[in-house]
Length: 395
Image (cartoon, rainbow, N blue to C red; front, side, top):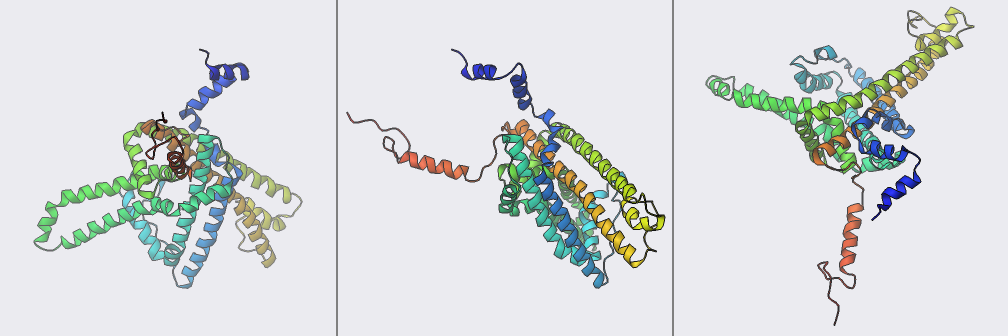
């Protein structure tokens, strides 16, 4: 018997193109290098740009209020640099010292504006991830508002993905601190020393959570966006994939990271070249002094600064700096959106490697309810029993 699907494919295609497309579609890991493109659609970049602009405004207001109450200075704990990433103290610095420094230095920004920024980015990243999942798995190009509506309906889960592990780590740190305070007294210090092994296990748990979330946070967001998982299930999936296939996951992340880095380098070069070209063009027929308000914000190093400019020249420099900042924010939005798109593709690929679940198997709101309604209607259809089995016809 002739395979109709195979015959139709050969007849409809031209040469080896259809076969190559099918082969390429069946391979996931080569597509991860170009997965950054999933985040470069205008609507998705626009969502990231809005997030960056809103974050700038919110944090700007918060910092201004902090200055009014005599705060506004943050003592950043060390080590916080990339070079110190292997220093053992970085986990405590990032998870505990940095949040405490933010609360002490900029309390209004941290406690009032921080939650707003957290919710904003949780929803926006979820929206970008949802749209990227639809395109990667189903080839569907959803509108930006569709992804936003989907993510907004699951804002609690998306916020929980970021905040839940942090609260858990803070709880462990507080537990260790309280245990250490109690164990300092005579008699109890011996008991505290005996229980040090248990304390080390608790500390190991906190370290694994912090280090693991640094790797799988994007996957957890994608779990909510692609599978409709709640916060606990999403975090469990991320860590399960990390522990089940660590080398495979690392391989996928490296592949996706290559694309993100390439896009970031190209975008940064285009930004710098555009600003420099524009600056040299508009100041070509200006004198050095009149060119400073335009050239200084666009082309750093043109002069020592704009501190000694007059009132109008200072206002001009600030407006020019605003437009330069908008351009820089657009590059940041491209990188953020591209990274989220790549993380979503990595999640779908590692999900298939670990669970055998096809990437096209996405959570569709209302699909399960519709299937249950169809099943209920089928049980009431003549010729079927209430339990769904066939009824024998009357003799």
